[in-house]
Amino acid sequence: MFDLGYLQPTEVPQIPRLAETPAAIIYAPLGETPCAPDVVLFACLPASAMLLNEAASRAGVASGAHALGRPTCMALPASLQHGAILSLGCIGNRVYTGLGENEMYVVIRGCDLPKVADALTVIATANSTLRDYASNRRRQLATS
Image (cartoon, rainbow, N blue to C red; front, side, top):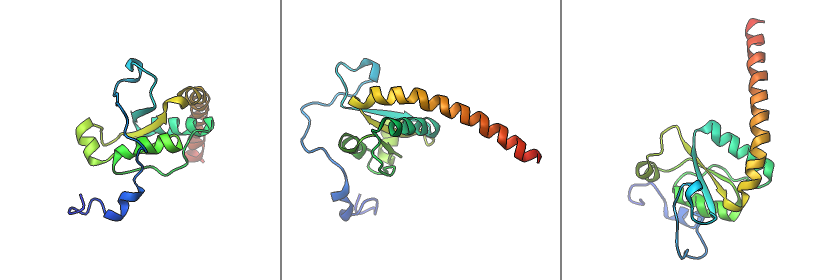
């Protein structure tokens, strides 16, 4: 990665990592996980990521950090340490997982899911109302 210019050695210390190596890692769809998740990775379109990010902010669990790029795997420890985070994904992750060019990740701590879910109800309703208002306003401006 260094030889390609993809990553510089000075960037490595800034990459979030877990303080300890986990005893085990379980990857499973959220509804099928055999235990409570430490972190949940949502692969979604930007519009859905916007709603999840707004809900995390409303719930008080957003990290406030900028969207992360490469490597995608740093989003997991970053979320565990700081709260909900956006990740744009990296090329390796996109190749291995099949993440689409129009998709990105929202990473949320498992313990924060109930708060984000509650906030998502309010955020989704507010966004629907604002979409209608903006659509009507746009039509008004176009005919003025």
